[in-house]
Amino acid sequence: MTYTLISRSEFDNVATSTVDFTLNSDYDEILFVLSGFYPSANSRHLSWQVITSGESGYDRPIQSAVSGHWLYAYDHSHGAMRYEHSYDSDVSHENYQRFGISAHTSYKQHSNASGTMTLYKPHDTNFYKYFVTESQGYQAHLSAFQQYLHIMNTAGYVKETAALTGIRFVSTDSSGDQDGTINYLALSMYGLE
Image (cartoon, rainbow, N blue to C red; front, side, top):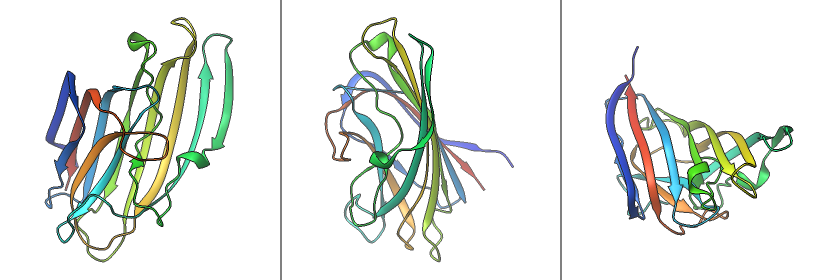
């Protein structure tokens, strides 16, 4: 079994507020590969939300749990794997789900976010839609030589039994509300039959 490239979105220095992908019903598993993300404002996250054919907005309830750890190059300190409750989503809200760690604009040459997200059986009408993400954020903390790497893992589900037909990626603030624009993005969508 191999992944097939379905679509790719890449742009640099062209501010956009949304990036949409159509979820193809030919695939049981969808893999998104984020090769780079850079927002227009500091401490913004690449986040996502889905839509079904019977809905008019990207606003499905999502439940998730997040863990992460960090490495700080300046003094070689690090943090153990821990639960990241502030990154969770709760089904009682319809905010965007964070793909992973934020990207900072303080030192553009040293800031980036990348990772993968797998969405399982997005067109199945019997079960909720499960997903997992693994992301890395590489940032300058106080100056160009103080590098900070934050690694995050997320697992969760979209509380929806209707088939998912699309996914939208946006820049959000820490509360999951759309905020700012995406200035750089390299995102590919693959399908596995």
